[in-house]
Length: 517
Image (cartoon, rainbow, N blue to C red; front, side, top):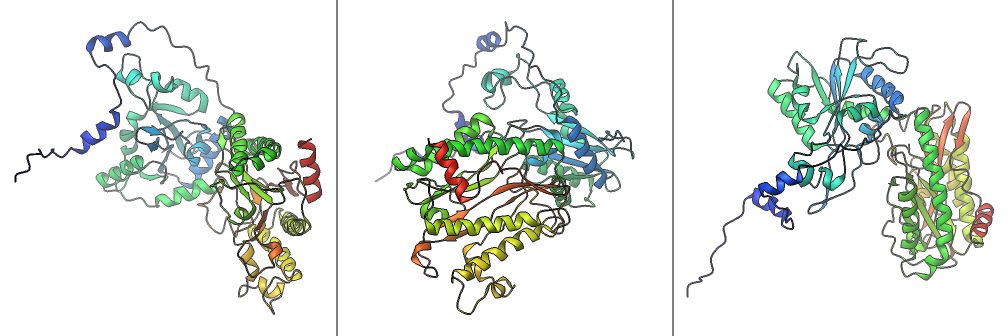
């Protein structure tokens, strides 16, 4: 018997891609196009003014310039990323791009910052007015004219869909950087590139299309970079190890908004107890605040009640919140400049710690205070963790939780480390544009680095006893405690930027009682 069903022809990749727009019913008649592109009044002025970050970003670019004389440096903002089918995630520029341009929030998809090499000292000036070795140009997609199809038909970039984009002049005014159309990028990158000419480096991991373009230009010119792209990534990351005055100001703002969010969380706890997904009540309370008072959360909020607090990165937040248990809330507001706080408090759900909860909480707090004591210029970054671990190991020995015959001293040795069963993470990480900032910095400048004024990092020891942990008595099981603060190194010590959020068990209880009336 012959099957008479016709076999469909295989669609091309282009046809499949076009089907993304199956829902579109936009007219394409000549009459429609003529009418929609006519009879528009003057666009309102966007009111763009010089950004407060401009003098600071000029100095940052000058510092980067000094590390790569004669090399063309390419720093992409990144492109829009698809969330599902034809909808995109809210755009966030790459942190290196934001740091060097001052652009934040959702600015500017597809933009590329290029530092073009100049003769020594003839480039853009830094903070002291001395010329650098590079001239910066921002290649952006500017506002399209109203007689173009982009104006009404492009759902990613069109004014009808996403609002008016800044003009080239607007971008220059805002950033203090010369702005040119992104269509000029390829020719600009290729200029004078060759085996004996200009070398080109690109920050990788931001925009695959720009990376591919740079590699194609190198190949066509027969040029090999004398330095690897990773060196530019590394340098851009290390540039953020010490924060300038504006960055510290933004960190203070992020922490202040975060503290407000924690206050709202405390007020939400009775509602969280009543809801079958009480952790989500906590999460959405904080996240709504972050969106209203900042750009968003700086990372996925952890709202971990009871046993869930022993999972370090618990973000499902779909559990119940029970009286008598603890809830660990790890959250941070990212402000419009994209700087984020990162704070953790472990709260008794009904406002009072039990004796065993208080015991564990106090041990973690003492470990944090030990780290604070060495957070000063001249100390090494790794000293923070070592100080906290001395307290943790001693307390576990005191409670009889270390294995038989293992003292705190033995556990602290490189061959021991038994105490780390209950705290497998580190005590600190740098903080700024990324919640784990400066992550691409060299080990000798990060983990083995010496603390300097202007560095900002977390101090966040913890103890985590899983519900099925047979190495501890039952009274400890199913409990996780972490206390995390954001710390600024000063000339003579440190400042706890999040100190306004209570830390001691007594202060936490009094604070919660006051907020809940």
